[in-house]
Image 1 (cartoon, rainbow, N blue to C red):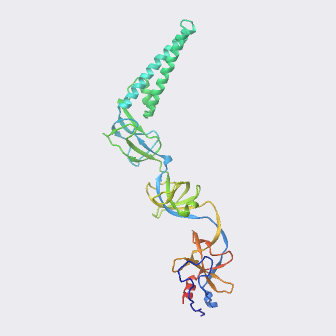
Image 2 (image 1 turned 180 degrees about the horizontal axis):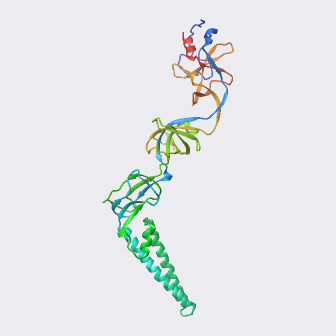
Image 3 (image 1 turned 180 degrees about the vertical axis):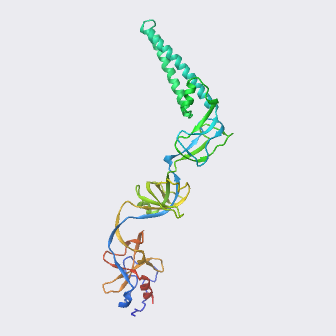
Length: 369
């Protein structure tokens, strides 16, 4: 066994040694038998895609979820749905004894009758004017009254539609029948799952302010992933991602649809929004997950196996490089991103150099003797 004597290390002041230089004044030389346990790889340029691994929080897709507030005031008489129930668009969620609803129905009934009367007068006056029985002014006045009444009827109808009255009830009011004992119905504006219910029978609601339900289409969710530091520049809209719940389930595929433009002052991170299909309901709101975001952009650089990298007493990375005389020299390096089981080397190595990928610990031991 050939072992070189230990030389006093240069730079005892603790200052970092510039990347790419030998950090010790001597190299390690091994016998042929010892070299059998050393494996090397040639450093060559490679193309790669970066992968950013970070934590995230599951949220509803805000384009497919809505909070429902009371469309009218009154007391809740009946809640028709339960939490977790799937509802169709337009389905009744709750009944409310509402004076607003009764007043709107009455206003519409009056507007229908007024418009019907005004239209009849206008039609009659048109006929009379055609036979020169009345003046043009009288006919024009009747037509204007009819148009105004029709506009009032349309406005009253829109007020009922805003209160979510169903078409059958509107037809009944138009026919002169009372509007379902003055009860209004809160309806689902979208199809989805009832994920929040804030009302109960007997509760009094205030129009436009009282929260009632939240409905969300949970077949698609968002994951808000936190991206820090240099990783912010590596994540872009359109990047693919996999979401791991940590429960042993199969990772879920997703796509980055937005990268925030503002850094959170509390965490110094940017939110990357990942859209994920969730047909089986695996992802739940507020669930913590791990997001692995792979860049769609390719990069070029020098990559070496993770096993090649050691760290010195100051935790600075270094590798062993095969010199022209067959000895092994210790080189300081600067690590870039980790790509699977490889590191990107931004400084300290050149293409064509041979790096020890298996046996570095043995070389380090020999050098310290």
